[in-house]
Image (cartoon, rainbow, N blue to C red):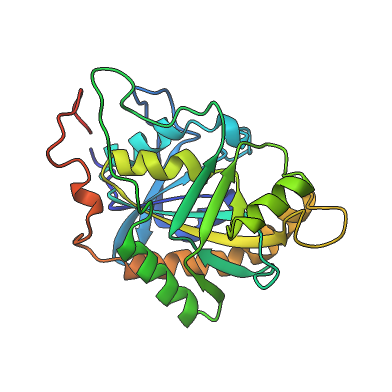
Length: 268
């Protein structure tokens, strides 16, 4: 395959201008087409594949994103490390809009999403105690701190089904549990990446306080989009810096997640 990439970025459409020498690649997978064509290009000396999570026209709501196809498509291009910027709501008053949270834990509150590649041909149990790549996390924290972001090193991302936002009671419940931010797309992305032995790092941009943290009307769709749009240039810079800082050789445990496990099919 002519178009190859070492690093994948799954994010919003505002990140397209990340790449130099960009080419679009149409892919098919055993799980159907990915969210959109994949754009392959370069950031500095690194080869990168960019995939818009919701599609360019935002046609895939969070509960309908073809997560399995997306991760499979990236791996088929050679990707082994994934950066996943997304918009989240804060569950803590001290982490306001503009903060970057690099979570180290995840709670799944979705329902009905297919969350495994291994649903036939025998059981495959992957370790998921620590959902995110420790190397990717360290890189993201370092470059965000150097870039002047309000950075939160660690925390728990709770992923809800969507597309609705949380009720005030739900948000207050999440906060009482000590969770940090809430989003709609970080799962099953993270576990599917682990099932393909990929490194996966979440870059969670706080766009609002969730419904239960502050008094008021609660978060709106327009508010989230508006805040993300005003910060997209800064987010592009963060992602580009993180891409260039990721190691060329992986030494973390992510790449050995499937060692010793008999798989029911070959991976790309």
